Each structure stands twice: as structure tokens, then as C-alpha cells.
Length: 304
Picture (cartoon, rainbow, N blue to C red):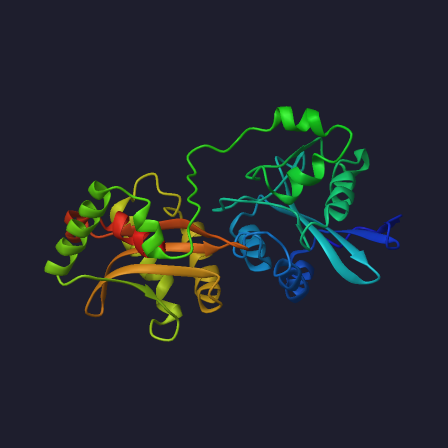
């Protein structure tokens, strides 16, 4: 499929050219510009990356790419990375193995987001519904919508994600521990002692000392050892996605890994994705031999 024709809309700093891209190889060629814009945004560096989008579409043949981009004087200024599903009837974020989705613009460039959303909501686009899933209340999409005339209606329809917990961190780890009671600190010390007695070491895996090409298979083996039935990584497509995306993002330090190791072996792992000013726990797993020291708690502590 070829890219759709572009059109121009008036913009405060000059004309804003909007274009729709539907050809995945063409979208992949946009990766350098895409990720350069992402680096200036508030978006999650992994979930909103070009690599994550392209791999999501490759892993899901039912996804028809529908990426709306905006340019100011030929410079990429905005991306609304949508796909068409339900035989083209629904436009939505791919949201494949992601926690957050959003429009990608430079920080606080809500006028560009509004133009992207206006185009997405135009009746001439062919699909019948537009569904913005996995967006946060402080996302570019929500903040742009709130500035529009029907913002209050959208705000009323917004459903908060459940099950996600946020921790605002102080300046240092010691400051964090001081916010916790003695029972919490004693419990943490006991778990650390149990790990030490089993010769487990908790540390961050880094590309300089841990081969990036091994990370995906280590993660998958530990995750599936913990939860095979009903896991989102049960399918061959999901495993291919992990092997395609995670090693490179790990090398770029966009995906971070904390692990419980014994010698050269990894007994537990948690993968994290980098946000603009945040670190988000993504997925993990561990062997039954590490169960006694609550590796999940130790790895979250390492992430903190």
C-alpha cells in the first residue's frame, strides 16, 4: 500500500503538512526522524519508538498501519501511530505488549497533537471508529483534547487504567528508605540475607558485560518458567517480537534489566522501559529455585 496524499492546514508558525503513511517499509525508513522527535517528547522511549511500532505490525498481520504525521517546513513535528483493525473499521493505537500509547510531539506542542487528532477524526478516513487506548491522563493526547471545545465530553468518557502503581522517588535511595517504616526495612533486609545465603547477587545487567543477543531468550525462559499458561508471551509471534525488539533497545539503554544472578546463571529478571523522567516495570520472571527470597521484591528494590 502506498502513502495517502497529504494536505496542509494553517498553523501559527506556518503551514502544517499532514500525511498518512500506510506502507510499513516506508514507515520503517522514517525511524531516524521518528526517534529523534521521540527524544524531545514526554513519551515512553520504548513503547513509542519506531522499532516497537514496526515490530508490532510485523507480529500482527491483522494490523494495517495508519500513521498520521505532521511536518513543519519539511521537519517532522508530530506522529500519531495508529493501525486499522476489525477489517479497517476501527482506528486505534496498536498497544501491542505496551503499557502506554500516545501521540509523539516535542514537549508541550499540543497544537500539533490537536491537528493530528482532527485529521484522525475526519469522516473521510474510511474507518468508522477511533479508539485511543492505553493513554495516561497526563499524555499528549489527553492534554491536547482538554484544550478543545469538546474536551469536557472526552474527559467524562475517559477511563483511568487500573492496576498500575506509581512511586514518586526522592533524591536518593536512602531518602526513599527513610519514608518506609521499620517493618518494611526489616523485611527487605531479611530477603537480602536469604539471597546472600543462596549466593544470589542482585544487580543491573548492562550491555558492556551481558550480551544483548542473549537477553531476549533469558527473559523468555524465566518468564515462561514462572507463567506459561495464559502468558502474553506464550505465542510464537510474541516471542519473535521480543527477540526482534528487546536486544537493540537494551543496547540503547531504553530497556533496562535488573537480575538475580548466581555465577553466570540468571535466576530472575525484571525488564524496565525508560520514560522521559521515569522508569517503568514491564515484565519479568524467575526460577522456582529463587522463590524463597521473593525475587520480585528484590528486583523492584533494585529498580528503585
